[in-house]
Image 1: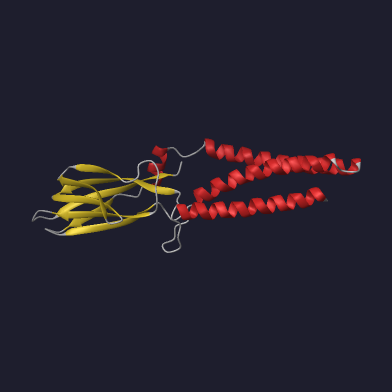
Image 2: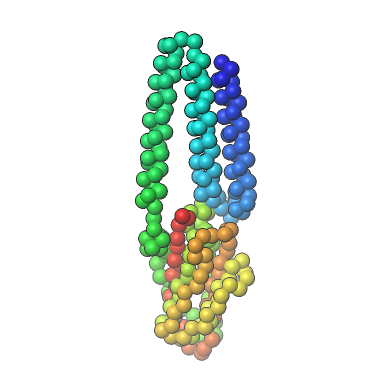
Length: 216
């Protein structure tokens, strides 16, 4: 009975610590409700780590329970229950390993997640602004690059992050440019803007693509 009370106290402490770590991780990554941003990758990492710690502690406490059981019948039932639990844990570990081994490659992620090309028409001496957020509300996918191709006219293209200039390209017809947004991994949730400024007296046409990746 004493071991069971210890088990309950230890697991209650692990749950409390897990919640504290999750809230601290979410706060550090800028999670919020408006706009919704809840990065689940941090939650998954903490849950996996604390789950592993819980499994080790549970195995040790179960060993003590079996060792101090007063009757052989109790030892047998405890050992049988532990075997069933070990089989379930092994099945979960194998499934997780398969998912990690079959992880989406960066090139495949770009193909699957990237938006379709969007056409922008800019009147003479006018401008157009396109705004997007990165990463997504769950923090699983993010914009890595913006590919801009000018088909007709002339345009000054500016990339902003939270209204701060990141990069600028001056393009003429048949020219293209690849803007780096967050090529490897997102830092914090941000609002990005593309400003297309037509600098000539003729209409300008261009296409752009938001290339995306997934959290490794």
